[in-house]
Length: 266
Image (cartoon, rainbow, N blue to C red):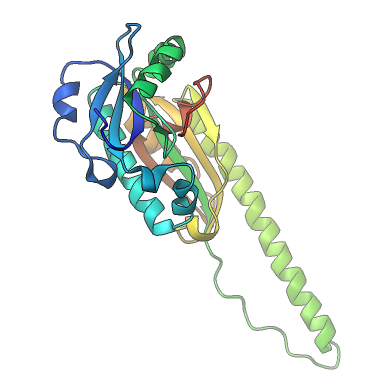
């Protein structure tokens, strides 16, 4: 039970043998112990919760903290660790990062209000995991030196020629990437039952070299995981300048939200 703090809620899960044992000793955000909260209207669903200090997670402090990338990264690691530990023994509906309620009673109300939706979502996700697929255009090699101006090629024409060559190279790379995306999609959907498209990563989120042009999540049956990974990695190997990255399996973060009740903050 949360005492003296707010109720940080990681996920809703189906009750299962071994779930209570998994949660015992599990720590989450701010190293707080995780516990399970049940609704009052029955159903075999519970929420994974831990207490967090109001001074860091109330409606005034939380937006400010979320702008601190170091703080946000630590929060995400703790959140993900709890969700993955629970998903190892039962089906979960991961909740959005920094989903906070006033107390455990508010969490119970959330479970009661969303009982039918949660039961339906858990049923749809049982037996499936999420795999991530990213496609990158590898950074091209350094271009050859610009042509020296001469009698037939002044500085202006040399500059325009270089710009035209750079533009043509970029367009060629995008055409190849488009074909690669088609091949990847065909391979992935031969196994997956659903897909969510995320925005390509750029700026501080782009930790891999190259340009991220595809950032998809697929919902894949548990027993298709290795075949999915192998087929997707193989799908675009014949195309030059592309790199495919497959990550997972994960709890189905990208497929949890549709139809869920609105998360609450204090």
